[in-house]
Length: 392
Image (cartoon, rainbow, N blue to C red; front, top):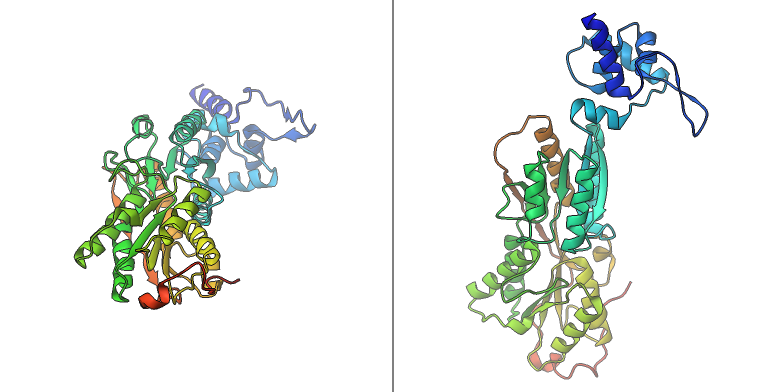
């Protein structure tokens, strides 16, 4: 009697069907949908055993497991994911929130996450925040309602994180990708942004540049407050490199666009028209570099003869331009894959304890967009002299 009850519970728990053996019909297509009971009969095992194999829980002999899986494959059996999550407490889904899916940097991350998750039998549910904390909170709420097992997120804010703390307290592990949150003891996979910016600016200083500007599309919130940790760390690295070279830091040379490319372009244009204009730029990502290139081309500045440029990110187009751009290449695929592997390890109980931080180094790739500092006589009177700065 106990075995009969166990078998009935296994069938209903994972299949969501009644305990009788009547076939279920798909109302949308009129086809017969195989149940766990059908798979069990075909494999010659009990429904409870078939449920354990198809639900991936409990102990089953390897030979029996193969019989059940082969039978399920031949019958094109598809498990009821909602019922499975109710029975096992796991939905086999991972929620992912990134800033912008159109950004090639995050697109590469998404591909690495989905490939890694799929290899472990997990499905990814994707959401975007558009760098808006309200949208990020809504996305977290929706993903939790969908019973995701864990979250991978590139957070919009380093301070407004109550929703992420709440998620982790609900037994939903949170893994941070690309950005850090000091107050949240979560597993973090990011780049050494400080070190990368420091190296890039130091390399420009080594070419004689003292007027080096940092340009970002992020908003500024006070003198040292930025919504995104990666931007703050890049600014800190930029400042440290100038300080160590005994070059004064000029606030006018740190430009923020507030997520508005047109506004950013206006700021850059005004900076280039100033008497003590920059001779080199560090762009905090490739989309910022595109804005810089457009402005410099319109103002007839020649790269690298009159202006040098380095940007974070290494999309394919940066090597195809004339001149090719010097870039800071970030191992985003490796970071995203490692973040996913670690999250799954936590879900399986293979990783325990407090969150760990993994920082991977970025690589400065020197190309043709950096030259020695121009002579004042060459650099003066811009706006009239015609030069070549960007060609496809």
